[in-house]
Image (cartoon, rainbow, N blue to C red):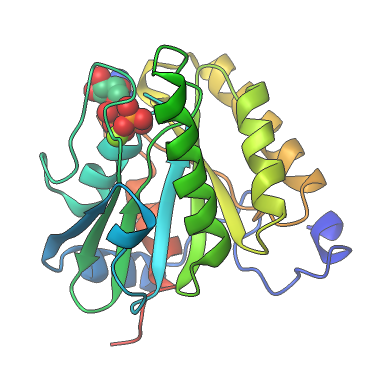
Length: 228
Ligand SMILES: Nc1nc2c(ncn2[C@@H]2O[C@H](COP(=O)(O)OP(=O)(O)OP(=O)(O)O)[C@@H](O)[C@H]2O)c(=O)[nH]1
Ligand SMILES: [Mg+2]
């Protein structure tokens, strides 16, 4: 915690090992129990819906589990499309959670087989969105629990540092990581968060399959939602 205070972010709740209070878990549960509906899929800047509700975006490598995490958080199996083929989510998809929060599924990065021009336009759209979105309150940057942050994830962190947004590292697929790998990934994420100025210190390990960490992440995101 001391490290973070030196970055002037002592007001951020939830230190690395801090469990959410029961009241916060309940807030998260109530928020994510609300109806969630698809609002828009943007393939270019003109397709972005107008900014309104506070937004949380889910970013990460292709196939890391962004769409699956969104489905787990909202308790819907098929809200966001889940793919076996990496690079499936090609547009920025917006989902409205009640009248309190917008959840945003971003296309993944690091998928080598996509045509170059497509990769470029995805990144341009994502960059434009990240830099210019006034309603964006947080980015959850997803990292595979089996591997920890890779070079492309660290690049994404550097890009996010420039956007003046707070972003939070979230480990995915914890159910298929060995306990040792999970511990190592957590430690590596916390270490990376310490040296990146805009990274939130609280790293959450999740599994869309077993539900691990889902209630905890809901509680963290409920703090950002429009008040009831
Ligand atoms: N075991 C396990 N598999 C998962 C988990 N989350 C996602 N997966 C699997 O990982 C693959 C990719 O998941 P997606 O949710 O489509 O990943 P994505 O990040 O949205 O992928 P793109 O949209 O292509 O960037 C699918 O086969 C999922 O079933 C998890 O928590 N545990
Ligand atoms: Mg996806």
